[in-house]
Image 1: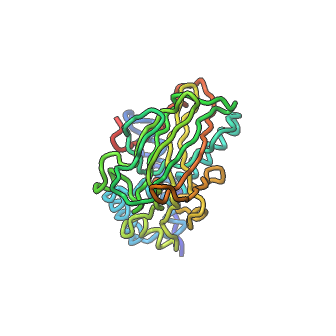
Image 2: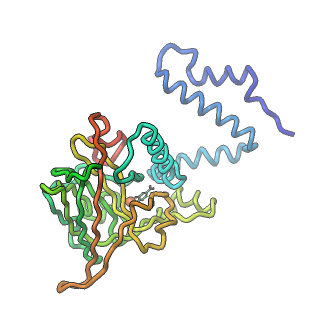
Image 3: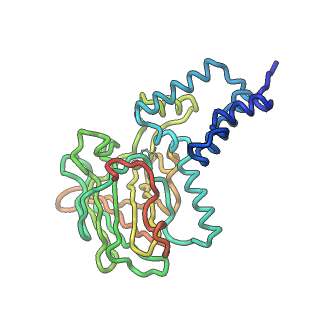
Length: 301
Ligand code: DHB
Ligand code: FE
């Protein structure tokens, strides 16, 4: 027998009170959102006949997620961060903002304030014995004009698949730099070929993925924020061709236009890898479109 009470006047009025509808203070937007969350939650409880045991398990899961700082990981793994990209893409298409390099998820591992250099940077501190990587490319606008002094803010994992700052064994800002493009819009860097990322194996994100029968792996990839005055800020990544997880990314970041070929060869100093990848930005006059979206990020003011 299914008992339903969520749509009764008493329960409806009760959750309107819980969301502060009868209070003069507080924030209207927050009241609207919280009311909707409560209403949808009680519908889920009734529709799926969630038991008290399941309910308290979920509450405890949220505590675990926060304790391990994995909420950002979980929203990516459940496809919600990618969904935000799809929604922004659809809004852009409707507004006629088309062309240029596609956006893809930022992920939870950016650190603000990486060292800045002109035209070239070496990203690695020399401690990781990975294959030497040389990457270069040009930043242009959708008319094909090179963008000088564009900021290429790049970050990636080491050969263990971990990121400096979050992995305290790495040096400060290892594999993180901001590079200003030259007069021809070009940037260059030397680094090491990154490995793919895997969710912490005993963390709450992987625990949930296990219950969905899913893995928590990402292909090898390199993150970028690309920005230039008068142009829309771009949050993107390249995903390296040939990776086993290229089309099986647990965070759904791979897009066809963002697959980068990587060429392995040998020079006088040993094995090396080369990537050539250009970025194309859309023009905009709106200042708020020229910066990254607000989000809590490590070391960001
Ligand atoms: C996620 C994204 C990354 O780029 C990464 O290296 C790890 C996790 C994520 O979206 O969860
Ligand atoms: Fe990443």
